[in-house]
Length: 146
Image (cartoon, one colour):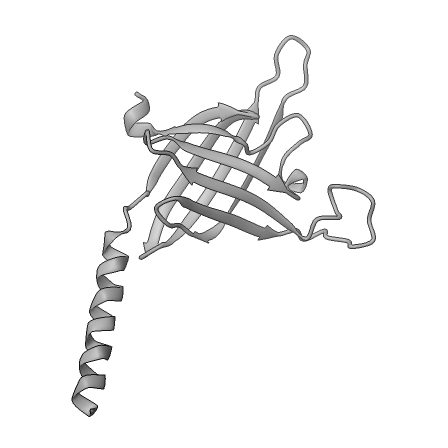
């Protein structure tokens, strides 16, 4: 009985370790556009945990105001992507302002079959960029873009 349990634990550990190695490494710089010119940086920390940085820029053109912003942190990624959450420092549950009423900034990261990445700003991110830009868009790995 003890040997069976020991064997099961050993096999489970091997399976988990093999699974962690099977997840692709998404590290790198991704460039694209959507609600601004977007840059996404992903750096694998270990297994499925990544450091993430997203920047958006809308340049000043023809007397129109520009816009810029950025956010960074850590997230878990799977083969399909993941959700990135950052707690809003100025969160106020009683505020009527969309800038302060959302507890988290949430951005979905989606790895598409064609190798591109889609970012979807979902809620609460206005604190991290101006009103004329955002974090949603389509991006390509910098090595494939050029």
